Picture 1 (tube, rainbow, N blue to C red):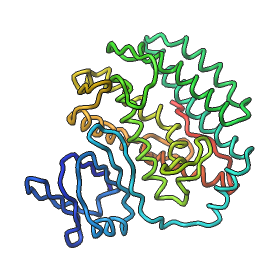
Picture 2: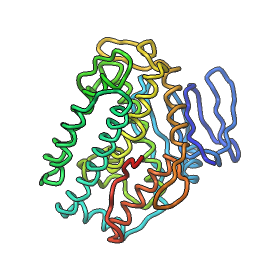
Picture 3: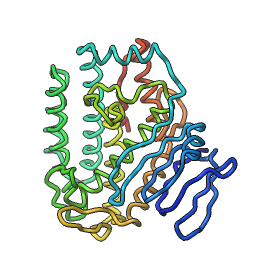
Length: 330
């Protein structure tokens, strides 16, 4: 089974015969079988040459880059091998036709809102009184279908998340004093965690999109733009509450991550290397967990749910079956 490769030690990655070789700055060498790698995450200083890039491209392996502060900086996306002209045309037409675009944009927000609501319902049933946030989000959910513009829809989404984040102070057992989402740069422990975990999910979605015929730059909720794979932002909205937020709640409520897991610099915090590695390890465990899929009637992993979401979107674009975003049913 292929796995993600996370590189925390600085050095050089190169091709060595029919495998990969990592050489640390101290001269330590480690060979990595390329057949076992699905994607690579560089969270360190790393050097490589064109021979390495050409080799991983043959195997369709994306690379995702994070800097010293665990901020996502970009991805290397190998040349697409699953090209489909008809799908590309339909993907573009569903963006150009504003009604079709709004239909898909609403679907993403409905799924995200449903998963947010179910997170709150889970904790409310376990003695965390978040009924106020649930009522507000329930009311906001009903306004999604009435939205007529992307801007209006994004406003509703922002209000839903604002109400959701107020409940985090109740859900999380630690004293977090979380008031609002701040991204550039994250100014406290929770914002730092959200930024790192969300960027990992975005990268996971991008890796899954690569193995389909979808073009990652043509999106519906988020405006397509330069230097970003905006379709991955759309699909990530569905999975951030399901995978990312639940992971954050678990890490904090088990005290695996605390204020001691961060380094403070000027007006922002960033994760210590050991804390970053712990988050990555727990995320990978979560993605490998399986659930019984009600429609497929078989066990599928959380990671494969992302691939299935891409396939559902393709069916919608080809007019085979209307897209419905994945929502938690348990």
